[in-house]
Length: 112
Image 1 (cartoon, one colour):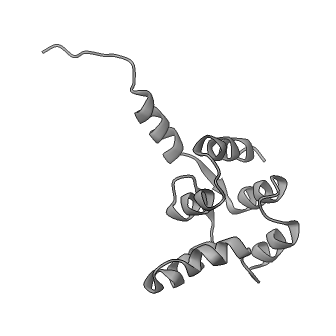
Image 2 (cartoon, rainbow, N blue to C red; image 1 turned 120 degrees about the vertical axis):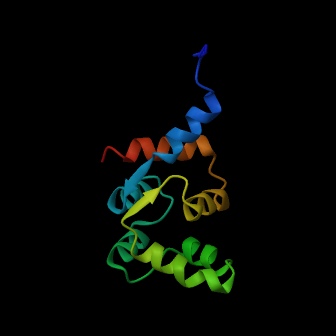
């Protein structure tokens, strides 16, 4: 049997790298405020659990009713933000943030 070893498929490598990107909740909020994707007041309210940013609330309101509670619970009590999480993808798409910019966001703020 001959096993052919070649270069990894770049698309597969990118998908695997994105799947591994994770930020803690505090890293996420630091990044969102630093990038001015949310205001500091919105970040503080989200951090305290008193309110979600308007964009997050609007995205949740657009979900089917049966998915809203779970989305709200996940947003309010988030421990980690996963790059390929449907909520993250939906919010990035809603702001027209390119996938490459999301990659940069996750790699940049993973170090704070």
